[in-house]
Image (cartoon, rainbow, N blue to C red; front, top):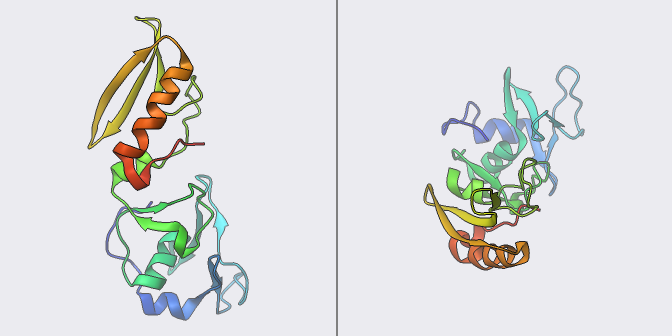
Length: 167
């Protein structure tokens, strides 16, 4: 995810340096260690594919979007949550909240289900969902399966096309 709306590179420059092969960008020119015809990007520690262009690290999914649409929105979401899948049909513009809705399950989650936590004070499973920047409590449940049914029912209604179980 990049922070700026205005790209440091133009669509024409992206077209000059890269071609799109249906799965991502391929280098068109040889410069330094980067050879023509090679896949252009390596995954960074966060899992996104990146490459230095004009001395600045650029993320492949952002350049794919610029390559196709001539703009670089603030946030581009990977529909299938795979940060390395930079096919144009797997990318969409999103708000920060929508991007969070389509996130994976946190490694700290103990219930195994996004949106469900253990409420120690009540000794119940609590279902919460984020919507428009606010957490909404959907209830407390004795059984984890009941909590899972509640969140599975609510998520598509509230998060719509950005709904994701996070698996």
